[in-house]
Image 1 (cartoon, protein in one colour):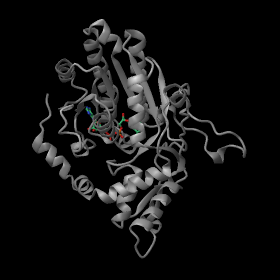
Image 2: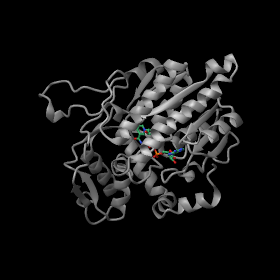
Image 3: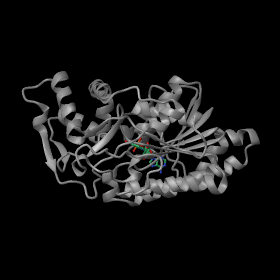
Image 4: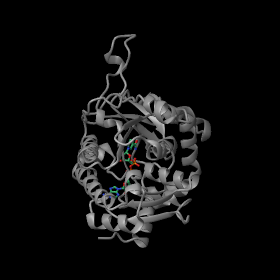
Length: 361
Ligand SMILES: NC(=O)c1ccc[n+]([C@@H]2O[C@H](COP(=O)([O-])OP(=O)(O)OC[C@H]3O[C@@H](n4cnc5c(N)ncnc54)[C@H](O)[C@@H]3O)[C@@H](O)[C@H]2O)c1
């Protein structure tokens, strides 16, 4: 298979590209605009492979999308390109509307035109896999809001959409567009909604890498509100395996929820990282002493949790990492990959991109 991966220079996209090149015989065309979140250094282990190609393209540029489809003739699309940081969506929602909604529309239209021109066999085998988030479902009851002993609900594939932030609203919109293109035009789509990811090559604006790197730099570890927000954490390589399973064996028109069965309060996550650093890089005082509490994010959802039973029952996928094994690997990775970290922190990775690539169109 030739798979067109959008957003392949991002955190999850790069894990998907590494997985496909290293663990399968398939080929990848990585289509990425290389925003601040795109980093080709995350692909240095696979970029020399003959089954890998890169196209620096904005998904909002229809002419360029059409050129890429015609030139590479993919068998499937895995669509991960997005603006992904909730805080940025609150201070500047425009890019989220543009990339996540308009960009997804452009990609759907380009894919549809290409798919219509395929012969019947390739047409029926083609897949458009849209990668989304559990945040589209909104907020779940927190344990302190239900009676003792009462079952806490989980997000299933049929949970109604109720997004809270500009980010999640833009992702919800894109999910709806993808379903409409299936229903109206017959485009063979499949959608996945996943919980919070963590792991290697994560841009340090998100909680886990931010805490690891701030802790090592002796900086404060900011916690929103009381730190009692609950997220369901999934190791990024488990997500990459799940996504490849869905694009190759998922049923057209279906949605699959992907999660790690790891509900954790943010404060517990930060404590775990501090305790691992106390063990791996000990210093006079505990890293926990660097924790500070900051004003909560507006509209902050209190709890997300995924029921991933459809993925295991129908597609035989299970996460391989527990939170304990995955977070230890992650902390170790940041300790072992100072060059990647330094280039991201200094912005050197962007100068390298500017020197080596010029965006088309
Ligand atoms: N990170 C998570 O925990 C999580 C959880 C569930 C779902 N998701 C979804 O998975 C996808 C990937 O998330 P991530 O954390 O890897 O994001 P990321 O921000 O790390 O990467 C996004 C990538 O998309 C590229 N991109 C942005 N705008 C583009 C455009 N207009 N055209 C082409 N490329 C563009 C960026 O350059 C970057 O490489 C997103 O769709 C996100 O909504 C993320």
